Length: 122
Image (cartoon, rainbow, N blue to C red; front, side):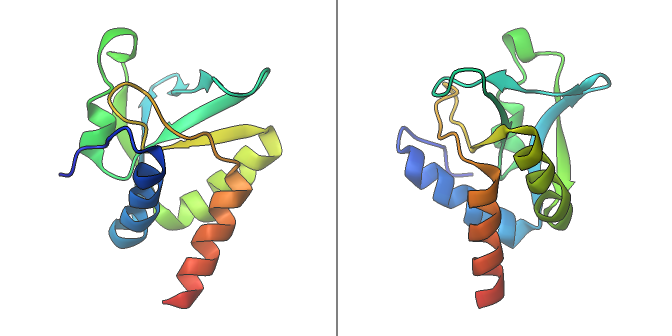
């Protein structure tokens, strides 16, 4: 596993490439729901972090997130259901946040467009 770094754009690119190859996306959940945090960039916005590998997600299951566990989401479900729903709800995507929880906050529709265009190019 290649470690996520302080190069947030490289982490984002790795996220896009890896989820297309693996066919799944990872986030953290409990029986009560999924992890979601306040945006560091936008007032009154929330972000849901996602990772391209289980190990990336699992490293965040410590401290206040110790009760969460990594959960896989099939790529098609992420693209067809999650991104559209998050866009409607105004929730941003946090792709491949590193161990310090540094990462980009991306509009779901932007990721949807990127994945749809790249998916058609294959």
